[in-house]
Structures are given as structure tokens and as C-alpha cells.
Length: 350
Image (cartoon, rainbow, N blue to C red; front, side, top):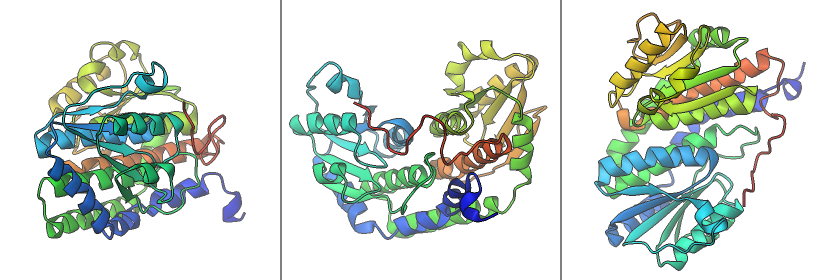
């Protein structure tokens, strides 16, 4: 059977090339430095992140990173305020960072136009240097991910994570030699992870026949919880949801019944105790727990080893096994994760 006819072959190839694409992004230093200079020159009182879908999960990660690196408030924009209510907001001294894989979603572009009309400079991040977002932005950072043809975003999502991290680190004064070393280190770690299928296979087996999954994380891993759940939904038609472990205790724990599967992201020290507490509570209710982290969950059904020392870049590494699980689970169910039913590569929300 030719590679062109194998279900999921495009998603598999795009997952595998991610470490190389991250190294390519290191060559975008001029645009990343221009974006960082725009932030530092404005001395903003607020950063505004505008995004949708997977890009919104990347923006959520960047919101935490902006707080920790720059010590200034950061918010996620609400596009419906513009497109649904027609509201024109007034901002304090701000910089906006708009994130979109295609750079063409109408509601994102309308939000960017509204922000610009309030005299807020805009940094755009997209995978298309010729996109409408690139044209509307004061500075554009190309994601350098190359063409992505599988409907489920993989390499463009992690490119967004890295582009945002590099921009915020440069705005905080982190030097390129340090960033270069850290990116190369995490790329090497992920390349090694990609060569080790055993733990992923065990997780796929644990998810076989399951129709609902809860993914929980905290801090930087919150973005991974949301994005990992989305990948399972997109490719497998599973009722998956991603939660902060703190929020999950207030309600979603109630959906756990014997045989339910919980994916616990324990790689980040920030908020880890709440993830472990949720995992313990879920286990007591009969859930099977898949732990992605250093191996701290007592009684975990599956452990995917991850002992990442670079907490700030952790989401780059921990999303990759979840992408692989979504892919292999879909193929095992006879689905084509490259072309999920009802979904398109570019979603033009209004």
C-alpha cells in the first residue's frame, strides 16, 4: 500500500518533523527581535492576545509566560465582543499579539482591526507571510512551519508556542545564545521521544473503546490539557475536555465513573499538587489514569515518562505524545485523522 493511501500519513509526517521546524524558527530572529522591540518600546500596561481554536491554546500559554517574564497583565481577547456585539473597546497602553495558523479567520481579523482602531500596535503570528493578518500587523512573525495539510494542527501549533515564547523571552532580555541552546535541547528531547513508541502504544490501548476523556493540567500545562483534548475530539470523535486541575475538582470530577480515562499532566511543578490530587480522586472513583510526567501518580494505569527541566518550554514537549496518541487511536478505530468528518483545515469563524 502506498504512503499516499495510508490513513493519517500526513499527520504522522507533520508530527515527526516538529523538532526540525523549531530549529528553522531560530532563523526568524530578525522578525522576532522586531516584535520584541515593539513590546519593549511601548512599555505596555497590558498585553492582549487574540486567537481562536488551537491558536487560543497557544495564547493561553503565552498569557502565563507574559505574566512570569514581563510582570505585566495579559488578557485573551473576546472576538464576539467585536463581531457579535459591535463593541469598540478602549485600552490602556497596550500591545496586541494576534495568533492564527492561516491568518485569515474573519472574526480574528475583525478583532485585530478593532484593536488597531484603538491605537494599539499589533504583532501578528501566522504560517503565511502573505496572509491578511500579516498585512494588518505592525510586525509579522512567520511560524516557519512549512505547509501543513492534515486537518488537525500539529506543527503549526507548536510553532506558535515557540514563536510566542521566543518573542516574550527577547522582550524580557533573554539572549539568543541561551534561547538557541534551550530550543536545541528540547528539540533533541522530542526527537528521542518520537523514537520510543512503547508508552504511546500503552496509552492507546488504555483508550481503546473509551468515549470520554478528561485531560487535566495546571500552569503552563493548561494549554496542553486544552489542546490535547481538542486533538482527541478532532480525530476520534471522543467527548474529550481539557481542564485546569483546580477547576476540574469543582465539577468535571463528577463525570468520572469506573472505567473513565483521565490524562494527568504532571510535568510542571507549578500547580502539580492539584493535578496529583485530582488524579487521586479520579482513581478512587474507578478511573484509569494516564500520567504524562515524572511518575508521581500512585496506581497510574499508564505512565508516559517525561522529566523536562525547562518548565517554560514544557508545552512543546508534552503535547507531542498527545498528538501521537490521537493519531494512533484514530487509525486503530478505522478513522482518517487527516480528514476528520465535518472539519476543514481553515475554519472561517465570523
